[in-house]
Structure formats: structure tokens, C-alpha cells
Length: 181
Ligand SMILES: [Fe+2]
Image (cartoon, rainbow, N blue to C red; front, side, top):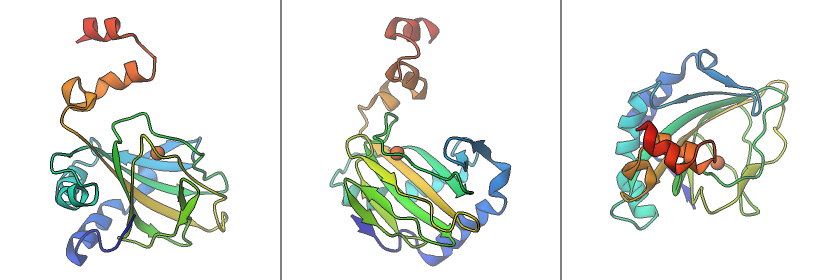
């Protein structure tokens, strides 16, 4: 579902002002993107809470809570987002466009969506396949998004903690995780 005007104009301008130097963030080679999560930019947590009432209404859940939020700036000929479902705490996802030169459609289950700044797509990140096709105008383009993620209070993210992702991904066993706590 496409959502218009995620934030009011003032909040959206304040939010975009956090990303004046996106290339100072961590570079992820595989996606050709620079990312910063809410541990690097704590203000993102404030915006995740601001958008929580909207998420609760869109996903028809009065109990969902923000998990983690990620800013991502894609640029360059290798920018890509392969077809995937998320394994992190992404039961409910709001993918919001922050800024862009040329829109880069986001596909969710074979349907392309074109987003403009301050528009978002609401979908189920863990259950619905999502991806992007070829990056348009790769020599000059850039596209920046924020991924707001939400889950229910009984999700492992809240009951066990963020580090439990290592168990979900099979890097460690449940037993190893228990002894590390
Ligand atoms: Fe994803």
C-alpha cells in the first residue's frame, strides 16, 4: 500500500537535514549503498516513534512497536536490491523515499511502485518478496530511502534482543546464544 505524506513538511525537512553527508556512512559493496541505522543516527528513533501511529493504522495492529530503522543512499553502476524476504525484525515495513534524482521502482510481489520523497510503501518484509530492477541512469542517479521496521511485542527482537539475529541467521546456536548473555 502506497502512503502519501508520511511526515508533515516541517518534520520531513528536519529529517532530510540529517543526511547532508551520506557518504560518511558505512558503505555496503554488495548493494552499492551507504547506510546508517538508528544506533548511528539516534534521531531516527524519534521519527520511528512519530510514524508508529500511522504504521499501527496501516497494518491494523494497535500493538506493533518500532524495531530498527535504517537510512540507505544508493548510488553508482552497481546499485542493486536483489529479490529477498527479510530475516531481521521486519514483520511490518514502511519504505520511505527521502530524496532521489530518478525514481527506482520498488517491487513487492511482482507489483512495481514508484515512490516520491515523503511517500512510503507499506508491506510485510518477512513474508513478501521485494526487490528492484536495474538502477535507472546509473552514471548520475542516487536514491535515498529510510526503512522503518516494526514488530509485535512478543517478537524475538524484544523478548531476546537484537543479538538473537545471529541465531536466526545460523551463525550461532540457541545454546551458544544463551551462554553469551
Ligand atoms: Fe528487505
